[in-house]
Amino acid sequence: MPALFPLPTLLRATAPPERTARRSALLSFSFLELLFAKLRVVALNFPVTATVGQDVVLHCHLSPCKDARSLDIRWIQHRSSGLVHHYQNGEDLEQMEEYKGRTELLRDGLSDGNLYLHITAVSSSDSGSYMCTVQDDGGYVEAMVNLQVSDPFSHIVHPWKVALAVVLTLLFASFVIIVFLHRMQAAQTKNLKIKDAVLEELPVILVKKIEEFEKENSQLKKQVAELVEQIEEFEKENSQLKEHYMKMVLSAADLKKQVAELEEKVFLQEALSAAILEIKIENQPHFPKLLSNVNSKYKKHCFFMVALIPPAQSLPPSAFREDAIEDNSIKDRSICSL
Image 1: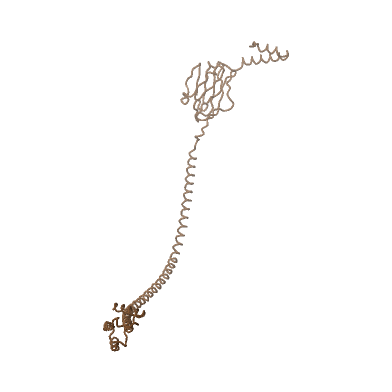
Image 2 (image 1 turned 90 degrees about the vertical axis):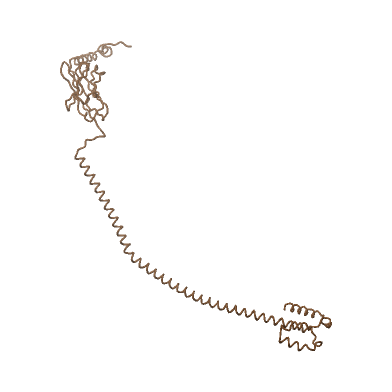
């Protein structure tokens, strides 16, 4: 470690002789000035700023530097002239009620002449100027420190501003309510006009509907009358058809009877024809008489006529021809049916 030399010796070793002499004179003057100078308290030229709730330190120091541990140091609020903090011979003395437990004179810097006051949890009422005073054998010295505390969440509100805000709020609310009621009234008026127009048009619409209904009703009546006429005509035609049907039924019964009679006549004629074919008129002299009786009485003498037919033994060989055999089969069938 290099040895420490007095400052004039160091200057003489490193500077020319003329400059060394000049500097030695200046240093000697400064030393004498410091030795015989008056003690002063120096503070910052700009204000100390803080927000509500923060801790703050107010800075002051002695000039020239001097051990302040044995001095009487006081911090005073300029606005109220109240004693914020009082320090004397290493002890804290009386202070204002508002600052009890909130202030502290930092002891670490007293030996170097630093007079730092620590204030905790500042409030808006702490804003203002503070005087740092020091008493020594020569008297009192002081300096002024300005503290500005801002509160972003609270503002000084004047009653007239509150009243004005309330009045403006009420006026605005009244204006909004009036506008809303006016719009509601206008909407209701418009709806009423629409309803009135609809009600005025409603009788005309009803009249048209009634006329259309009457037309449709008249058309339906005509259609009903036509249907009634058609039903009557249908009933007449139905009655006529029933009469025709009854007549046809009766005529069918008459036709059946006539057909039955004709069948009987045809049968008798076929039987007579068959009998005539089998009987030989030359072998039966009384046949004309029998034939007249058969013509007068059809069925009554049919069997008698058949009985008069001679047996097959008396018939000639010509009766056994194929056409005669067919005629005999017809006769047998006719007789069986009778």
